[in-house]
Amino acid sequence: APAMAADIELAKKSTLNEIVARGELRVGFDAGYMPFEMTDKNGNYVGFDIDLAKELAKAMGVKFVPVNTDFDGMIPALLSDKFDIIISGMTVTQERNLRINFANPYIVVGQSVIVSKKLEGKVKTWEDLNKPEYTVVSRLGTTGEEAAKRMLPKAKYKSFEKEADGALEVINGKADAWVYDMPFNVVFMAEQGKGKAIHLDKPFTYEPLGFGIKKGDPDFLNFLDNFLSQIKNDGRYDRIYSKWMKS
Ligand code: ARG
Image 1 (cartoon, rainbow, N blue to C red):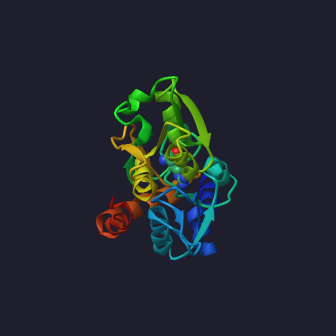
Image 2: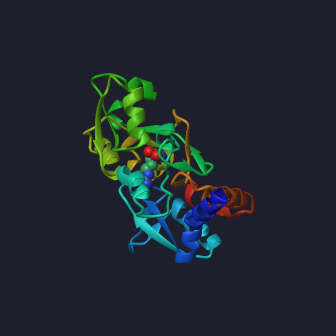
Image 3: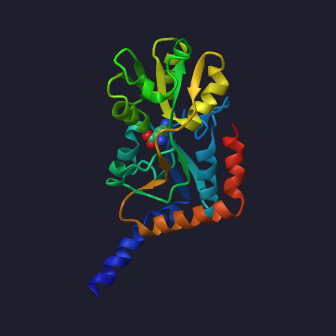
């Protein structure tokens, strides 16, 4: 009857069917967020998210198509169909979850702080930064920015459009602290921070990261959750994890 016709109409529009028919999985992410998504010397996209996305495309029997997109515009880009899915280290926040759906989290991270060498001994925990004399930086539109503003309301805050630029402010002595997802901070310290900054490496927020899709698409959500539980238990997830997350 009419309800059934509507169901069939909806099923035809499911992203899952579209992807399979197209033969391509278009993945939105923002390169520069180590170790999840970066651009290598040859201009290829690499990282934890990229490998998961490729594994997902393989499981669907389709080609992986990267769509590098500014993180601050990631949700609008998904909603206007620039790609099929966000795999971009996106924290499942309730605010974002009002606008999009998330598959079950694929990893949990938290914010940590990289502090200027000048403040060694003076700033021992992130809470010590909550003073008007300190300038804290993070990236525009991220949970790092939210955490800095919410948890360090007395400090000055400045936003950057790229992770690397914000974190370098601390190395260059122009900012006192960089607040960001801890896995990024671990890689940044190993590559550029040694001896130049201090990493307070106790995460102070709880942040599950999830694949984001449009609302109203239970077929796709079901596929993603079953895919994630499969790879978490058959060794594929562990292999990808240890490739990128060894610190
Ligand atoms: N987890 C943080 C957030 O959701 C940062 C993610 C940044 N991702 C990126 N690809 N730059 O806000």
